[in-house]
Length: 270
Image (cartoon, rainbow, N blue to C red; front, side, top):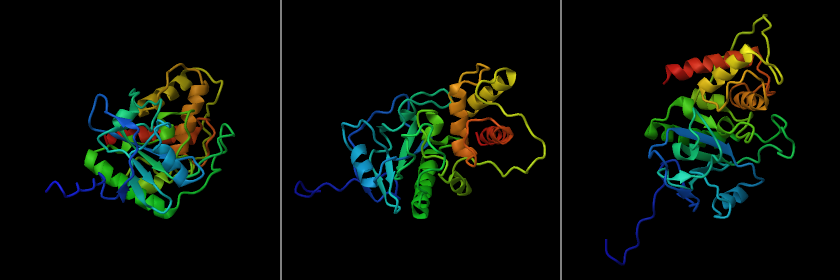
């Protein structure tokens, strides 16, 4: 190449990304060069353009690796080799620097009305089919190239319970699982047996057992035997992802059954 010829334009890491729209907000990965998790977010802003500007603004100190528009376009903002700033204070299986361990994907969606806390379940826009189809292609590509386990394709709310609620209970995790991405429980048969439910204020060994199962699955939770606010937040986050029909922070029989099944699935795929 002669000195007069321009350098070739850099290409996105994924063939499913349409272009690079760089963000300055990134750094070196710490402790690893190989991400082992994919974290899905919604933008939570009124417009995709506003969210894109914010993620590329050095003042914001936030970013992501990929941005998925409502119409299915995908732009890369940070190289996969770099540590994007999308997870914030977070934890999964004891790892507290999830930015270093993950690929972060922002999905354009206005999100919940966070002026109401906790937000009203389901009170935000659906994700368009074309957007989810594009996301599935992107996640499948990232999963394959980095050998990311299904048990580590997660919601922002999974790694930051109580602090984050995205991508929320309207996100179609079951569609991703049908495409071989992430974990999803099999439909449970209806049982006439009424199982005990545990909720805020309860104490004792059953609560400690619940907390132990949540910690074993990956959530950041202490085993105290007290159904405190942290336990409510973690159970709510679990329901937003894996028991979306009723998000109330109460560990009822269905929630417990789904949790047990998912622990088994994650161990089988480990």
